[in-house]
Length: 377
Image (cartoon, rainbow, N blue to C red; front, side, top):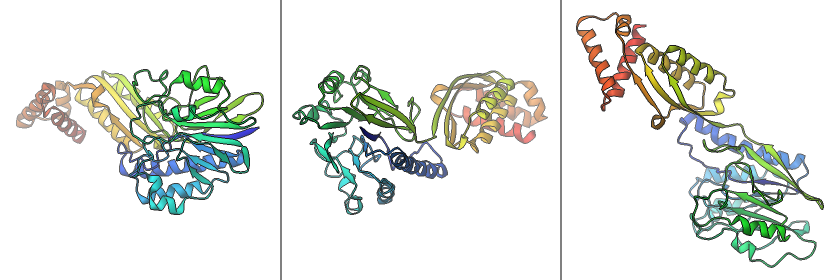
């Protein structure tokens, strides 16, 4: 039996500009905590090694502090760890893996896969890891081609393939530099590899038709909205009978799209507030809203106050302007509530007209109306 952890796409040093500065620190800290969780899982489940299938770092330009923090996290593993350079931390002359801080302080049990050649697992010569490091941002051929070209393993040797890239059948829009699914299936079926540990896709995904032996591990901590099953790694168990893959929870961050929310009045605003209230672990949730409809000043002011209140609870919450079409249509009773007359009422009507005109200052006019309404309230 052979058991190991398959992870990928750690993206350490990810700048996370979509978050306020205070939340960025929590996001970075939780990425390191997810790695610590992997080390604990490896020890608790008697795993013999760990493979990270690319994009350990978000780029080759991460700070020395990020490198030091990564190496400190890697010291927490009690088993060999194999790191594959991906398209973000590709293996070129300026690679993070050539940085002085990395080379000088890399733990002995951590090995960077620098060539597409079999690497023996320390202590078990009958187990080999074969990875193909990415050397360019945009590969032009199958990233696994060098591995497929290797001679077959000697009898009794189990090989684990580690690769990083897009699979043609899963991402048909990608035209070049993709993993050819049929070629990978053929190598697995022929026994050249017992398992293919893949990275680049941030959602846990099995390659159909590969006998359960080819998977993307996803990312241990979510990085964006389009991910279907992030916050995981995989525990792989190879036996004489087959391959078992278990999903391990490693993170808790979520990116939530609430689009096509139609607002027609204060009741709809309160319904949206209830939907946001029901979201758990708000401090680890990034939310964007797509809002459509027509609101009075009163309803829009309630919406603004609600979003301000929830802004203190969520890691981030914002209105997605590209998917929003929200019109503020002040009514006379809105102006009556402000109890304005004379010049002030004329100014309010002018703001109302500007807010509805859709010009460059429409948003400023809406915000001014909201502010006046809230102050009056």
